[in-house]
Amino acid sequence: MAIALILHRVNDFDTFREVYDSVAPMQAAGGVTAESVHRMAGDPDNVLVIHEFDSLDTAHSFFANPELRDAMVRGGVKGEPRIEFFD
View 1 (cartoon, rainbow, N blue to C red):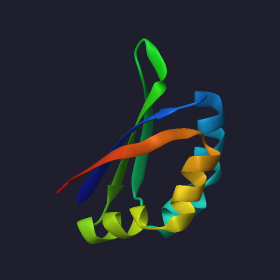
View 2 (view 1 turned 135 degrees about the horizontal axis):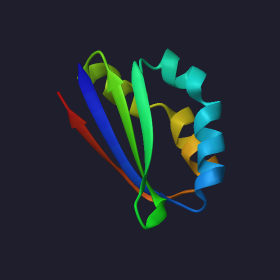
View 3 (view 1 turned 30 degrees about the horizontal axis):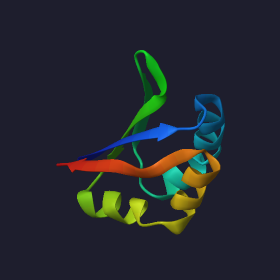
């Protein structure tokens, strides 16, 4: 199992969450086996997303998908997200 931790700021959490929820089929097709979304206490537009995958290769492939980057832009992600992979 592999885990990806994604930390990023968003313009508006509600907008981000709407787009995030709309890409659930892309997540499933990309190998996401479990996911969760968390807001930083005291800073609700600072978001932590946790995705689980069967392998690191699957995780890396998912994050290389240009459709994911498009979704991040639509969701109001500011700058480049910090993405950490754990095995």
